[in-house]
Image (cartoon, rainbow, N blue to C red; front, side, top):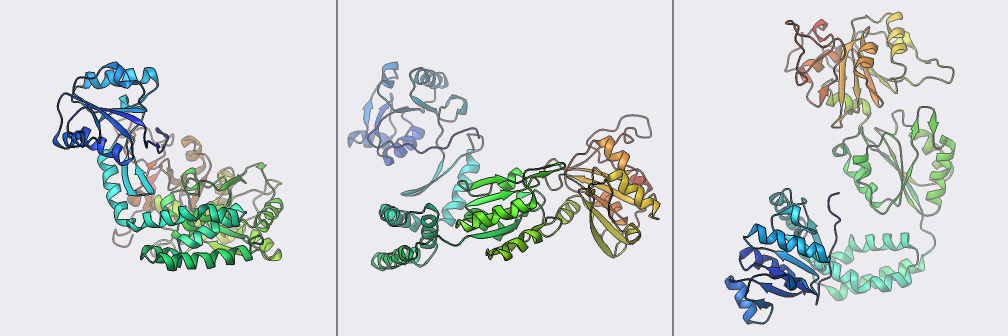
Length: 501
């Protein structure tokens, strides 16, 4: 975050604007709207500024800027056409601790002025940090359409009643839920329609009902699939419940981008499980969910991928049912679906695969993989191994020893759907070596089957990883990194049609 977002209270505060043109006019208008006492220093004035000076709305000093103009000022805006003068104003303001802004020069600004959606007392500020002001204005236009002017009326209505609600409803969680019901329910509709007396009557009834039932609110658990990483793959329901949760327990596979969408003031608890390192046992985690919900919290259990695909979501729900804790389940795009799609690998295809099987590659405590290998040997089946990176060589050996062809197409997708996604496409007999050469790390998904050969044509997202045997072209020169490279891709048949793929 390059700038700390802040709203300044400038009513009756002394502010300085240097410059007398159209840009200065816009800045003075904003300061006046905030109730500031504005002093303007300039040699010439635009007509609107001259009018405000005549009306006594601003103090006009008809000369060039001098250093003493900064004395006693809360902030200064330099809006002249003289870049050297603007920089001088900024440096002198910095020296004495006055907030300074030079218009259209982000490097000479202690603060910047964002694009504003004004629904007073509700204010929405949008900033690109000075990088793309036109984009900020375009976003403001979109928000102007989405947020009707009547939201300002609703904000004022809530502000007038806030102290009363706080004195009657003592629990912060219960108070938050009460306000959510008011601001999203029939009371808000009355306010939007200007029916203030009806809104107040309905509010009074709702408040009394809440006070009468102010026993600890019943908690609930939301079991939410966070998807494979890309936050845009979240469902609308997942986002809505994440935004209203009081506590969030999240796994290691939940991407930071997804976690950023959780409500800002929600308590966040990492329950990450890594190989050989569990912060909480599953039993302890189940008890924690029950405890938090029992305290009246709305608990978001956020899992990477889908909670019912190697996510142990079923075990957690059994514990909640036994404890009579209400819950909701929100499916997520599984790692298999997301990573395969972003790698250009259809999990089924009528020319190559009639079925798909999901398998855990996680080893037992004795180091074995308890997998029915013979059932996996089918040339028209796609195999997807979760948590299989550390067992990859053993997986490839077992599949080959049980009869799967050595040249079966196989792939590894690291951090699928994210910007740093990496893809290795190879053959079953070479995949482990190619993955080691490419130095892939967790989380990595393994896909084995004839559909993998389609990645050479359908790959569309991210860069393929470069394996050690992918260095030279026919001329003996190193291939440029930008060229999509696939280990052993030349050995795959490619007899599918683009239309069917």
